[in-house]
Image 1 (spheres, rainbow, N blue to C red):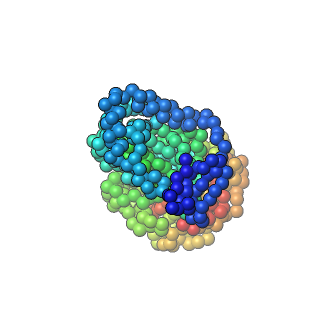
Image 2 (image 1 turned 90 degrees about the vertical axis):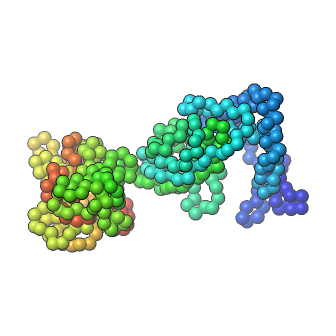
Image 3 (image 1 turned 180 degrees about the vertical axis):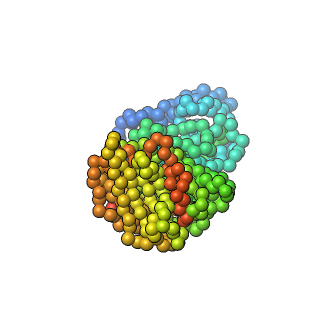
Length: 445
């Protein structure tokens, strides 16, 4: 139904006959009404079921209960699209209590209008990566609600500059409230939603407690991050030794046997934000073998990258600042030696082995430098400051470049020696080989 102020035809909004009328920033738009469509998708069927269940619950109310909702409706007008105040029916207010059906919580059975409104989500930390994981950490204030549930929607392909609210919300699920990190990857896949790298998305939350009105909907925006296996920003500044993996999968551990292992004892200004400092004596960050080993297994493409700022002068012997290198087996080493930066790997298949070494012409200094390597098939490419070395192709380069009990370390070699004095930031492991443009973008941060 269309709405119009009696004296202002320009305020017309809605459907008139076969036309849709809407006011935009460029003036009134009148267009043919879209043909109706069948509502047969799983999400639409669930919505219809929830509506039907609420409608049945309304018919089950007693006469006195209906009168209470009608009395509430007479004293609680709502505002329509034109900003006008009007009263709706008691039944319409009852339907506002509707929550999507879910087996995750006990159904609500209110028979009288609630007196309070559920507090909303006020903050959401989001870590959404292409291919997963999809992590949400919502926060809200406690309001004494029992059997508290939250309903989640997503809006896709949103403009990063729009000031309009999303119009197309895809329902994801209704779950019991949990303030802990929630992985929603399986839920989005079940809803036929697979996110695209760089896509701008919005999440909408509505919370609902028993005998409470639903909370005000709150919307939070984020952008889908690249497909990463591990991401240690090294911005940790806490009274704990945990170095957080931004994908919330495998945290690393800061180790300082003769000092304070808590990250706030090693936090210094970084190239991008904060960073972690290593004294070159016994400081190291230990990344679990199971976190990186499958990504560096045989025939797996990957990219390993880090920002490093060395202390100068640097002794002539080798100092590893990112490494799982074992000279008698396999591994990768980003290091300094003889006053120069070096990237190397040891590859081995059966009785055959090879050692690939790139010594960069830039002498060790106290500036920030970005280092990376990629593997695709049998081809290895080393990078320094976004500039690639000549690609190296050899059959052995497709072998595993780690072992299931070799940790990956920042600030030393994998077995806690060859400690490097300096500062690390933004260590990343991708389960694909980034192209030169992507590496250059990381080096330009």
